[in-house]
Length: 402
Image 1 (cartoon, rainbow, N blue to C red):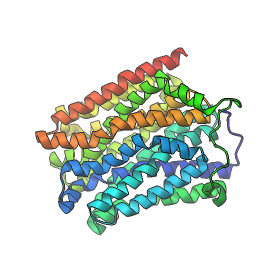
Image 2 (image 1 turned 120 degrees about the vertical axis):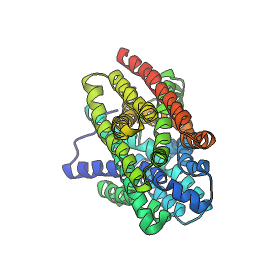
Image 3 (image 1 turned 60 degrees about the horizontal axis):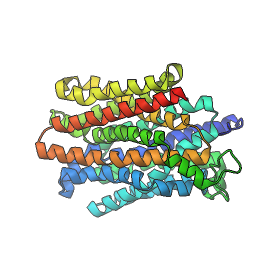
Protein backbone atom coordinates (compact mmCIF):
# COMPACT_ATOMS: atom_id res chain seq x y z
CA UNK A 1 0.00 0.00 0.00
CA UNK A 2 1.34 3.40 -0.91
CA UNK A 3 2.26 5.46 2.17
CA UNK A 4 -0.14 8.25 2.91
CA UNK A 5 0.94 11.73 1.99
CA UNK A 6 1.92 14.19 4.69
CA UNK A 7 -1.12 15.35 6.66
CA UNK A 8 -1.62 18.67 8.42
CA UNK A 9 -0.86 18.26 12.11
CA UNK A 10 -4.38 19.15 13.23
CA UNK A 11 -6.02 16.61 10.95
CA UNK A 12 -3.52 13.93 11.98
CA UNK A 13 -4.29 14.63 15.63
CA UNK A 14 -8.04 14.27 15.04
CA UNK A 15 -7.35 11.06 13.09
CA UNK A 16 -5.38 9.48 15.95
CA UNK A 17 -8.02 10.52 18.50
CA UNK A 18 -10.77 9.11 16.27
CA UNK A 19 -8.99 5.75 16.07
CA UNK A 20 -8.42 5.72 19.84
CA UNK A 21 -12.09 6.44 20.61
CA UNK A 22 -13.44 4.06 17.96
CA UNK A 23 -11.17 1.31 19.31
CA UNK A 24 -12.51 1.87 22.83
CA UNK A 25 -16.07 1.56 21.49
CA UNK A 26 -15.29 -1.74 19.74
CA UNK A 27 -15.09 -3.69 23.02
CA UNK A 28 -16.46 -1.53 25.85
CA UNK A 29 -20.16 -2.43 25.32
CA UNK A 30 -19.32 -6.14 25.32
CA UNK A 31 -17.18 -6.07 28.45
CA UNK A 32 -19.75 -3.92 30.31
CA UNK A 33 -21.81 -7.06 30.99
CA UNK A 34 -19.20 -8.85 33.14
CA UNK A 35 -19.18 -6.56 36.22
CA UNK A 36 -22.99 -6.76 36.54
CA UNK A 37 -23.42 -10.40 35.45
CA UNK A 38 -24.55 -11.54 38.90
CA UNK A 39 -27.05 -8.67 39.20
CA UNK A 40 -28.42 -9.34 35.73
CA UNK A 41 -28.86 -13.05 36.48
CA UNK A 42 -30.94 -12.25 39.55
CA UNK A 43 -32.96 -9.48 37.91
CA UNK A 44 -33.70 -11.34 34.67
CA UNK A 45 -34.05 -14.75 36.31
CA UNK A 46 -31.69 -16.52 33.89
CA UNK A 47 -28.74 -18.90 34.14
CA UNK A 48 -25.04 -18.07 33.97
CA UNK A 49 -24.91 -19.49 30.44
CA UNK A 50 -27.64 -17.07 29.27
CA UNK A 51 -25.78 -14.10 30.73
CA UNK A 52 -22.65 -15.41 29.03
CA UNK A 53 -24.64 -15.36 25.78
CA UNK A 54 -24.89 -11.55 26.05
CA UNK A 55 -21.11 -11.47 25.75
CA UNK A 56 -21.03 -14.25 23.16
CA UNK A 57 -23.55 -12.84 20.65
CA UNK A 58 -21.30 -9.98 19.48
CA UNK A 59 -18.38 -12.36 19.10
CA UNK A 60 -20.58 -14.69 17.01
CA UNK A 61 -21.46 -11.66 14.88
CA UNK A 62 -17.73 -10.95 14.49
CA UNK A 63 -17.40 -14.41 12.95
CA UNK A 64 -20.57 -14.43 10.83
CA UNK A 65 -20.81 -10.83 9.65
CA UNK A 66 -17.30 -10.28 8.28
CA UNK A 67 -18.48 -10.69 4.64
CA UNK A 68 -21.02 -7.93 5.29
CA UNK A 69 -18.28 -5.78 6.81
CA UNK A 70 -16.06 -6.22 3.75
CA UNK A 71 -18.96 -5.31 1.44
CA UNK A 72 -19.64 -2.13 3.43
CA UNK A 73 -15.95 -1.17 3.42
CA UNK A 74 -15.96 -1.36 -0.38
CA UNK A 75 -18.43 1.52 -0.32
CA UNK A 76 -15.75 3.55 1.45
CA UNK A 77 -13.69 3.01 4.59
CA UNK A 78 -14.63 6.42 6.03
CA UNK A 79 -18.34 5.75 5.57
CA UNK A 80 -17.92 2.24 7.04
CA UNK A 81 -16.36 3.56 10.24
CA UNK A 82 -19.13 6.15 10.62
CA UNK A 83 -21.82 3.51 10.09
CA UNK A 84 -20.12 1.24 12.62
CA UNK A 85 -20.20 3.87 15.38
CA UNK A 86 -23.80 4.96 14.67
CA UNK A 87 -25.08 1.38 14.65
CA UNK A 88 -23.18 0.49 17.83
CA UNK A 89 -24.70 3.46 19.66
CA UNK A 90 -28.20 2.39 18.57
CA UNK A 91 -27.45 -1.16 19.75
CA UNK A 92 -26.38 0.13 23.18
CA UNK A 93 -29.64 2.04 23.56
CA UNK A 94 -31.81 -0.92 22.54
CA UNK A 95 -29.93 -3.27 24.86
CA UNK A 96 -30.53 -0.95 27.80
CA UNK A 97 -34.28 -0.60 27.21
CA UNK A 98 -35.00 -3.26 29.83
CA UNK A 99 -35.76 -6.98 29.89
CA UNK A 100 -34.15 -9.99 28.28
CA UNK A 101 -35.63 -9.56 24.75
CA UNK A 102 -34.30 -6.00 24.46
CA UNK A 103 -30.94 -7.12 25.84
CA UNK A 104 -30.68 -9.88 23.24
CA UNK A 105 -31.82 -7.76 20.28
CA UNK A 106 -29.63 -4.81 21.24
CA UNK A 107 -26.64 -7.10 21.70
CA UNK A 108 -27.18 -8.57 18.22
CA UNK A 109 -27.34 -5.06 16.69
CA UNK A 110 -24.15 -4.18 18.53
CA UNK A 111 -22.41 -7.24 17.16
CA UNK A 112 -23.25 -6.47 13.54
CA UNK A 113 -21.97 -2.90 13.60
CA UNK A 114 -18.94 -3.57 15.79
CA UNK A 115 -17.91 -6.20 13.24
CA UNK A 116 -17.65 -3.48 10.60
CA UNK A 117 -15.48 -1.45 12.95
CA UNK A 118 -13.21 -4.41 13.69
CA UNK A 119 -12.41 -4.90 10.02
CA UNK A 120 -12.23 -1.28 8.89
CA UNK A 121 -9.96 0.25 11.55
CA UNK A 122 -6.86 -1.79 10.54
CA UNK A 123 -7.59 -0.81 6.92
CA UNK A 124 -7.74 2.87 7.89
CA UNK A 125 -4.45 2.56 9.80
CA UNK A 126 -2.71 0.90 6.84
CA UNK A 127 -4.10 3.56 4.49
CA UNK A 128 -3.27 6.62 6.57
CA UNK A 129 0.14 5.75 8.05
CA UNK A 130 3.46 4.86 6.39
CA UNK A 131 4.74 1.26 6.88
CA UNK A 132 7.29 2.17 9.57
CA UNK A 133 4.49 3.70 11.67
CA UNK A 134 1.95 0.90 11.25
CA UNK A 135 3.37 -1.34 14.05
CA UNK A 136 3.23 1.44 16.63
CA UNK A 137 -0.17 2.74 15.49
CA UNK A 138 -1.48 -0.82 15.68
CA UNK A 139 -0.23 -0.89 19.26
CA UNK A 140 -2.02 2.40 19.98
CA UNK A 141 -5.20 0.94 18.45
CA UNK A 142 -5.15 -2.26 20.51
CA UNK A 143 -4.13 -0.39 23.66
CA UNK A 144 -7.12 1.87 23.16
CA UNK A 145 -9.38 -1.18 23.07
CA UNK A 146 -8.06 -1.97 26.54
CA UNK A 147 -8.63 1.63 27.67
CA UNK A 148 -12.30 1.17 26.81
CA UNK A 149 -12.59 -2.22 28.48
CA UNK A 150 -10.72 -1.02 31.56
CA UNK A 151 -12.99 2.01 31.89
CA UNK A 152 -16.23 0.07 31.79
CA UNK A 153 -14.88 -2.77 33.93
CA UNK A 154 -14.00 -0.27 36.62
CA UNK A 155 -17.07 1.97 36.34
CA UNK A 156 -20.00 -0.33 35.52
CA UNK A 157 -20.58 -1.85 38.96
CA UNK A 158 -20.58 1.50 40.84
CA UNK A 159 -22.80 3.03 38.14
CA UNK A 160 -25.20 0.09 38.39
CA UNK A 161 -25.53 0.75 42.11
CA UNK A 162 -26.49 4.33 41.36
CA UNK A 163 -28.61 4.13 38.19
CA UNK A 164 -29.31 0.42 37.68
CA UNK A 165 -27.57 -2.08 35.41
CA UNK A 166 -29.52 -0.93 32.32
CA UNK A 167 -28.23 2.60 32.58
CA UNK A 168 -24.73 1.44 33.52
CA UNK A 169 -24.27 -0.69 30.41
CA UNK A 170 -25.55 2.16 28.22
CA UNK A 171 -22.77 4.51 29.29
CA UNK A 172 -20.25 2.82 26.98
CA UNK A 173 -22.03 4.51 24.06
CA UNK A 174 -20.20 7.71 25.07
CA UNK A 175 -17.09 6.36 23.33
CA UNK A 176 -19.02 6.02 20.08
CA UNK A 177 -20.46 9.54 20.31
CA UNK A 178 -17.02 11.02 20.92
CA UNK A 179 -15.52 8.97 18.08
CA UNK A 180 -18.20 10.27 15.69
CA UNK A 181 -17.48 13.86 16.67
CA UNK A 182 -13.73 13.62 16.05
CA UNK A 183 -14.21 11.52 12.91
CA UNK A 184 -16.49 14.21 11.44
CA UNK A 185 -13.90 16.84 12.38
CA UNK A 186 -11.25 14.79 10.52
CA UNK A 187 -13.16 14.21 7.28
CA UNK A 188 -15.94 16.78 7.32
CA UNK A 189 -19.55 15.77 7.83
CA UNK A 190 -20.11 14.99 4.16
CA UNK A 191 -16.96 12.86 3.84
CA UNK A 192 -17.81 10.86 6.96
CA UNK A 193 -21.43 10.19 5.99
CA UNK A 194 -21.47 9.57 2.24
CA UNK A 195 -20.37 6.28 0.66
CA UNK A 196 -17.59 6.53 -1.89
CA UNK A 197 -18.40 6.01 -5.57
CA UNK A 198 -15.50 3.59 -5.85
CA UNK A 199 -14.09 1.13 -3.31
CA UNK A 200 -11.80 3.02 -0.96
CA UNK A 201 -9.35 0.19 -0.22
CA UNK A 202 -8.14 -0.36 -3.79
CA UNK A 203 -5.21 -2.65 -4.56
CA UNK A 204 -2.10 -0.96 -5.90
CA UNK A 205 -2.01 -3.07 -9.06
CA UNK A 206 -4.31 -1.24 -11.45
CA UNK A 207 -5.37 -4.21 -13.54
CA UNK A 208 -5.94 -6.75 -10.79
CA UNK A 209 -9.45 -8.19 -10.65
CA UNK A 210 -11.22 -8.40 -7.32
CA UNK A 211 -12.22 -12.06 -7.50
CA UNK A 212 -8.72 -13.50 -8.06
CA UNK A 213 -7.41 -11.33 -5.23
CA UNK A 214 -10.04 -12.68 -2.85
CA UNK A 215 -9.28 -16.24 -3.93
CA UNK A 216 -5.59 -15.75 -3.25
CA UNK A 217 -6.41 -14.71 0.32
CA UNK A 218 -8.82 -17.60 0.83
CA UNK A 219 -6.29 -20.10 -0.50
CA UNK A 220 -3.36 -18.83 1.55
CA UNK A 221 -2.53 -21.33 4.30
CA UNK A 222 -0.74 -18.63 6.28
CA UNK A 223 -3.93 -16.58 6.48
CA UNK A 224 -5.92 -19.53 7.81
CA UNK A 225 -3.14 -20.35 10.30
CA UNK A 226 -3.19 -16.75 11.49
CA UNK A 227 -6.96 -17.08 11.90
CA UNK A 228 -6.40 -20.15 14.11
CA UNK A 229 -3.84 -18.26 16.20
CA UNK A 230 -6.28 -15.39 16.59
CA UNK A 231 -8.94 -17.93 17.61
CA UNK A 232 -6.81 -18.98 20.57
CA UNK A 233 -6.24 -15.34 21.56
CA UNK A 234 -9.92 -14.40 21.17
CA UNK A 235 -11.21 -17.47 23.05
CA UNK A 236 -8.92 -16.85 26.02
CA UNK A 237 -9.60 -13.12 26.08
CA UNK A 238 -13.39 -13.24 25.94
CA UNK A 239 -13.64 -16.19 28.30
CA UNK A 240 -11.46 -14.56 30.96
CA UNK A 241 -12.96 -11.10 30.48
CA UNK A 242 -16.49 -12.45 30.88
CA UNK A 243 -15.86 -14.53 33.98
CA UNK A 244 -12.86 -13.02 35.77
CA UNK A 245 -15.07 -10.83 38.02
CA UNK A 246 -17.20 -13.87 38.94
CA UNK A 247 -14.08 -15.96 39.58
CA UNK A 248 -12.85 -13.25 41.95
CA UNK A 249 -16.24 -13.04 43.69
CA UNK A 250 -16.11 -16.80 44.22
CA UNK A 251 -12.71 -16.25 45.86
CA UNK A 252 -14.21 -13.89 48.42
CA UNK A 253 -14.15 -10.43 46.83
CA UNK A 254 -17.17 -8.11 46.70
CA UNK A 255 -18.65 -7.21 43.33
CA UNK A 256 -17.14 -3.71 43.21
CA UNK A 257 -13.73 -4.98 44.34
CA UNK A 258 -13.88 -7.77 41.77
CA UNK A 259 -14.68 -5.24 39.06
CA UNK A 260 -11.77 -3.06 40.15
CA UNK A 261 -9.36 -6.02 40.20
CA UNK A 262 -10.56 -7.20 36.79
CA UNK A 263 -9.86 -3.69 35.55
CA UNK A 264 -6.18 -4.31 36.34
CA UNK A 265 -6.29 -7.05 33.70
CA UNK A 266 -7.52 -4.50 31.15
CA UNK A 267 -5.15 -1.72 32.29
CA UNK A 268 -2.16 -4.01 31.86
CA UNK A 269 -3.37 -4.70 28.32
CA UNK A 270 -2.68 -1.05 27.49
CA UNK A 271 1.00 -1.56 28.35
CA UNK A 272 1.08 -4.85 26.44
CA UNK A 273 -0.37 -3.24 23.33
CA UNK A 274 2.30 -0.54 23.37
CA UNK A 275 5.24 -2.78 24.32
CA UNK A 276 4.65 -5.56 21.80
CA UNK A 277 5.48 -3.35 18.75
CA UNK A 278 8.85 -2.63 20.39
CA UNK A 279 9.53 -6.37 20.60
CA UNK A 280 8.35 -7.07 17.05
CA UNK A 281 10.42 -4.24 15.54
CA UNK A 282 13.58 -4.49 17.67
CA UNK A 283 13.75 -8.29 18.07
CA UNK A 284 11.29 -10.17 15.84
CA UNK A 285 7.62 -10.97 15.38
CA UNK A 286 8.37 -14.51 16.61
CA UNK A 287 9.74 -13.11 19.87
CA UNK A 288 6.56 -11.09 20.23
CA UNK A 289 4.37 -14.18 19.79
CA UNK A 290 6.37 -16.22 22.32
CA UNK A 291 6.39 -13.41 24.89
CA UNK A 292 2.62 -13.09 24.60
CA UNK A 293 2.00 -16.85 24.89
CA UNK A 294 4.21 -17.23 27.97
CA UNK A 295 2.60 -14.24 29.67
CA UNK A 296 -0.93 -15.33 28.75
CA UNK A 297 -0.60 -18.80 30.21
CA UNK A 298 0.23 -17.42 33.66
CA UNK A 299 -3.43 -16.38 34.06
CA UNK A 300 -5.17 -19.79 34.08
CA UNK A 301 -2.22 -21.61 35.65
CA UNK A 302 -1.72 -18.89 38.25
CA UNK A 303 -5.35 -18.80 39.36
CA UNK A 304 -5.30 -22.58 39.73
CA UNK A 305 -2.14 -22.84 41.85
CA UNK A 306 -1.94 -19.49 43.67
CA UNK A 307 -5.12 -17.40 43.41
CA UNK A 308 -3.89 -15.15 46.23
CA UNK A 309 -1.37 -13.74 43.74
CA UNK A 310 -4.23 -12.40 41.62
CA UNK A 311 -2.42 -9.07 41.17
CA UNK A 312 0.55 -10.79 39.49
CA UNK A 313 -1.57 -12.89 37.12
CA UNK A 314 -3.74 -9.88 36.21
CA UNK A 315 -0.69 -7.71 35.45
CA UNK A 316 1.37 -10.27 33.50
CA UNK A 317 -1.57 -11.92 31.77
CA UNK A 318 -3.24 -8.59 31.13
CA UNK A 319 -0.15 -7.28 29.35
CA UNK A 320 -0.06 -10.50 27.33
CA UNK A 321 -3.69 -10.26 26.17
CA UNK A 322 -3.11 -6.69 24.99
CA UNK A 323 0.05 -7.74 23.21
CA UNK A 324 -1.64 -10.75 21.62
CA UNK A 325 -4.18 -8.70 19.72
CA UNK A 326 -1.45 -6.30 18.60
CA UNK A 327 0.84 -9.07 17.35
CA UNK A 328 -1.99 -10.66 15.35
CA UNK A 329 -2.78 -7.39 13.55
CA UNK A 330 0.91 -6.72 12.99
CA UNK A 331 1.13 -10.10 11.23
CA UNK A 332 -2.00 -9.29 9.20
CA UNK A 333 -0.24 -6.15 7.98
CA UNK A 334 3.15 -7.86 7.54
CA UNK A 335 1.67 -10.31 5.02
CA UNK A 336 1.38 -7.31 2.68
CA UNK A 337 -0.94 -6.54 -0.22
CA UNK A 338 -3.19 -3.67 -1.19
CA UNK A 339 -6.18 -2.22 0.59
CA UNK A 340 -8.69 -4.68 -0.85
CA UNK A 341 -6.49 -7.62 0.07
CA UNK A 342 -5.92 -6.16 3.54
CA UNK A 343 -9.66 -5.88 4.11
CA UNK A 344 -10.26 -9.45 2.91
CA UNK A 345 -7.41 -10.86 5.01
CA UNK A 346 -8.43 -8.89 8.09
CA UNK A 347 -12.01 -10.09 7.67
CA UNK A 348 -10.99 -13.72 7.16
CA UNK A 349 -8.61 -13.79 10.13
CA UNK A 350 -11.18 -12.16 12.39
CA UNK A 351 -14.01 -14.33 11.08
CA UNK A 352 -12.10 -17.54 11.81
CA UNK A 353 -10.80 -16.25 15.12
CA UNK A 354 -14.07 -14.99 16.48
CA UNK A 355 -15.89 -18.15 15.38
CA UNK A 356 -13.99 -20.03 18.06
CA UNK A 357 -13.65 -17.07 20.40
CA UNK A 358 -17.44 -16.77 20.52
CA UNK A 359 -17.64 -20.07 22.39
CA UNK A 360 -15.47 -18.83 25.25
CA UNK A 361 -17.91 -17.06 27.61
CA UNK A 362 -20.77 -19.53 27.16
CA UNK A 363 -18.52 -22.61 27.35
CA UNK A 364 -16.73 -21.44 30.48
CA UNK A 365 -20.00 -20.36 32.09
CA UNK A 366 -21.62 -23.71 31.31
CA UNK A 367 -18.62 -25.78 32.46
CA UNK A 368 -18.34 -23.72 35.65
CA UNK A 369 -22.03 -24.26 36.39
CA UNK A 370 -21.69 -27.98 35.64
CA UNK A 371 -18.57 -28.59 37.76
CA UNK A 372 -19.22 -26.00 40.45
CA UNK A 373 -15.59 -24.87 40.27
CA UNK A 374 -12.99 -23.18 38.09
CA UNK A 375 -10.31 -25.83 37.52
CA UNK A 376 -11.70 -27.36 34.34
CA UNK A 377 -12.72 -23.99 32.84
CA UNK A 378 -9.18 -22.69 33.43
CA UNK A 379 -7.63 -25.73 31.74
CA UNK A 380 -9.77 -24.95 28.69
CA UNK A 381 -8.18 -21.48 28.63
CA UNK A 382 -4.73 -23.13 28.77
CA UNK A 383 -5.55 -25.09 25.61
CA UNK A 384 -6.61 -21.88 23.83
CA UNK A 385 -3.35 -20.13 24.77
CA UNK A 386 -1.29 -23.09 23.56
CA UNK A 387 -3.13 -22.89 20.22
CA UNK A 388 -2.21 -19.22 19.90
CA UNK A 389 1.43 -19.82 20.80
CA UNK A 390 2.11 -22.79 18.55
CA UNK A 391 0.26 -21.71 15.42
CA UNK A 392 1.24 -18.05 15.83
CA UNK A 393 4.90 -19.05 16.07
CA UNK A 394 4.55 -20.98 12.82
CA UNK A 395 3.18 -17.90 11.03
CA UNK A 396 5.94 -15.73 12.49
CA UNK A 397 8.60 -18.17 11.27
CA UNK A 398 7.19 -18.05 7.74
CA UNK A 399 7.21 -14.27 7.82
CA UNK A 400 10.86 -14.28 8.93
CA UNK A 401 11.84 -16.58 6.06
CA UNK A 402 9.94 -14.53 3.45
